[in-house]
Length: 124
Image 1 (cartoon, one colour):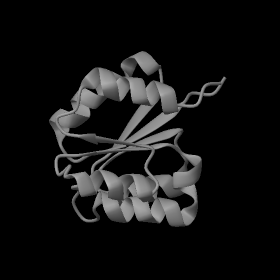
Image 2 (cartoon, rainbow, N blue to C red):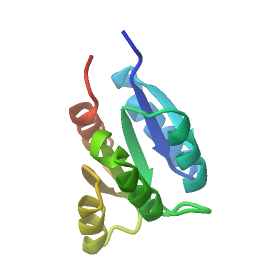
Image 3 (cartoon, rainbow, N blue to C red):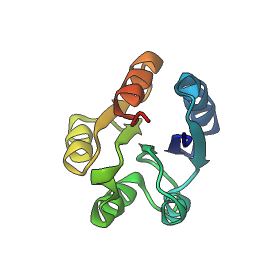
């Protein structure tokens, strides 16, 4: 049995800690990248089973990362959950039409994020 891996791309340490706690019940290995450039570098090395992607990131924002995932075909193969503090209605539309499977505005409800992860995370 292989370990399922979740890549969290988020630059806020407190949010990373919260998401890490939320994801514990999944039993998945959780890895963190703190900007878009590092996330794309990680994705070249290995493909996770699920990606949680913030939009407001240093060096390369989440919109560019999502677009790059879509161009590489990763966004169609790997579920992507977008989270952002800038969640105007158009942001949700943009995320979902851009290849994301779910969209959450910060502050999000932890149980709702966990439910989405458990629904989207492939099972062995």
